[in-house]
Amino acid sequence: MADDERPNAMARWMWQQRRQRLPYRNLPDDLRPASLAEAYAAQEAYYGLAESIYGPVGGAILLNALTESLAEVIGTTAPRPNPAGADPMTVAATMISMLTHVAAHRYGYEFWGIRTAALVDSQARVLLWSVTGRCAPDAGDGSASPAPAGLSARPRG
Image (cartoon, rainbow, N blue to C red; front, side, top):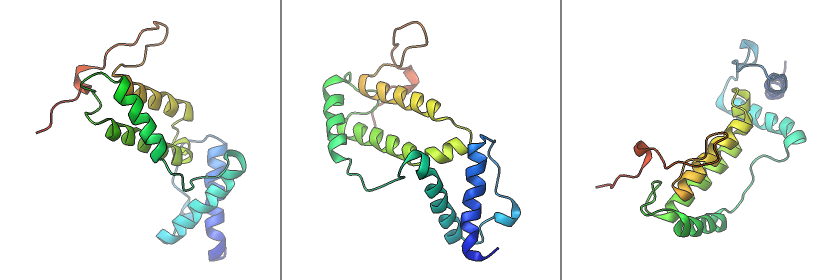
């Protein structure tokens, strides 16, 4: 196989594994990247395969307006002191960073067997706790409980 075909072959192998929902495995020996550049090229080729189903990956999105809006909600909604942190802008920036990071890596998480639905549920619970200071309700009981004591903010100093 020619060197310029290897990244596409790696991407096709990973894509087939993902589409078949197989557990994570390393690439076969004959497809292991010979360099970091080749690994990045395979990742780009993989994104190209994924885009046909999921749409474009990444992109330059300015998130400041969203962060400021979330900070405003946190500042007016969260309990005092907020268990996620004292500064609403810092909490909002952390939440937006978490959401964008997980979104950027969702293909990899799926490939590793972490389902998107589980990621969405986990992020929603963390976001709810960060904004309101309350844990998400357990299934069926309809009520949210306060955050566990181990998760409450402690003064720094």
